[in-house]
Image (cartoon, rainbow, N blue to C red; front, side, top):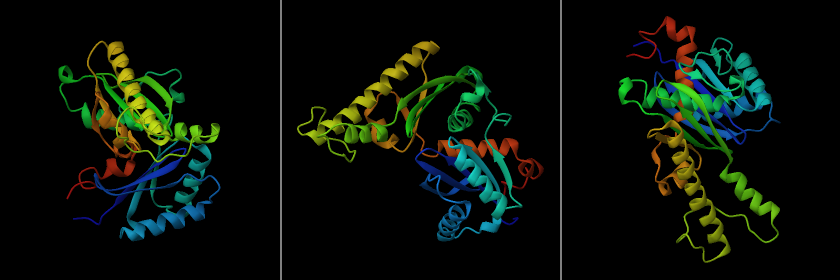
Length: 281
């Protein structure tokens, strides 16, 4: 078996930057750090190096990187990290002109966040592509990030749009900062939908309110498609909110990172050149 060659995928979000390290197509390490635009490339590298050493991952065996970003200054910083400390590694940036395997039906296509495209690619590759055409139904990805996004993929593998809501973290922080008497609340399930205290009332409003919103939105999206849809949840609050919905079919915590791996594989010269051995025993 050839020496291990790792692929590192990086999803740069407004709150956190998520990393996935893949050995062939197996995710072997998953971690995140705060998306701090004030850190230098050297600081990010030292954090990255320290974390990988804890996972016993050899930095010299990272063969390639794939980045999606909604924070342009941080994308620039991570590109500097890679060019400075991993000059021999291949870099794929998810953006205009990148092969994704899906059609983008958005106006204009460049307005779609890279993370949303990664979600769509991951959903299509994992839950629809390998099914027979007549067995496919539209996909809806609900991503519980800084914003809650709904991403819709047709039976033909077209990204057709979606919706964007303020995220749960933003809602909780807004209640705390913009109201005089409401406290900062840790989000967990209250005893029931009717809150018996201020804290429980906020928890109820967030958990049952957002879950009802999600069910309502997916119902409307299903009506727009004119058929049943398959709904996938991902992101930080997915495991808290999704169990209270009727419409979420599965929670996939690594969907965005898996989507970036698929994007890397579709665009990597290294992968195409070594396709028989790079991800095989």
